[in-house]
Length: 268
Length: 59
Image (cartoon, one colour):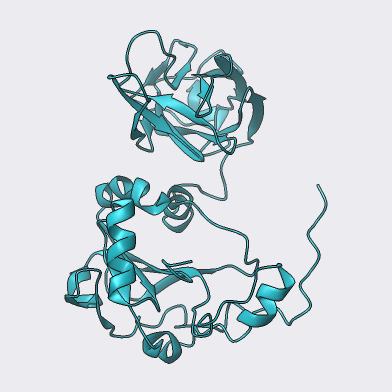
């Protein structure tokens, strides 16, 4: 279901998505209809492909016992849960298999981690938290250069059972909004964010859109010249609600250090 | 936050299971949720892809 919500992001970057399990077609049909799944759910009944690929989980009985899951008849034959990222030639570019049976990765997180949206060499990160959320922000590199685009990334983790409003949204509600303080010499582009999903509130006719789990927002910044400011104030406004009530709107404020690369060249 | 205790069975060496990094993902043809056969590489059609394995849609 989380993968389905991230699907527009996958489609926007031109990725094909497939999911494989040992379920029969009838179970997949029911699941797809119930959750509105549009990407292919492939049926490997009898676990032929799962076995051939070496993905048969032979420890399922022990794992279920260790995690207190009642043993299910027919659980033998399940695959290890995980994912392969393939490049355009179908070569395995990355494998992500989870040792801990309880871990999950959201669709957006898989996308970002697999396709290098988050670089290991990014600038120092700042963290902040508020009602219902925790956030972290960083620039994609520790220093900036003239006329080069830098990306500000803000990752917001929304507490379980909560959602944060996105746009479009009726008036009177506080949607998620990322902004930076205007600094002369920095041109700010448009925010890109993982898409919110449509959401209906019982008793209200208006259409809402909400984010759940992890949201990634990115904002392009172009440094036209060396700036006086030594830090960039970043502001994330939001409101988190559960199914029944709302927490007060919050604002995460972070300040990211601005360091000009190669100061000698900039002074020339 | 405490680290959860290791389970008592040997941990899976994730590097060694399934197709290897750098190898071509094998040809897979399986029926989808509509019962239609899907040839993974053909449907992928030269795009990058995410192939997800999960335990079950039923539990």
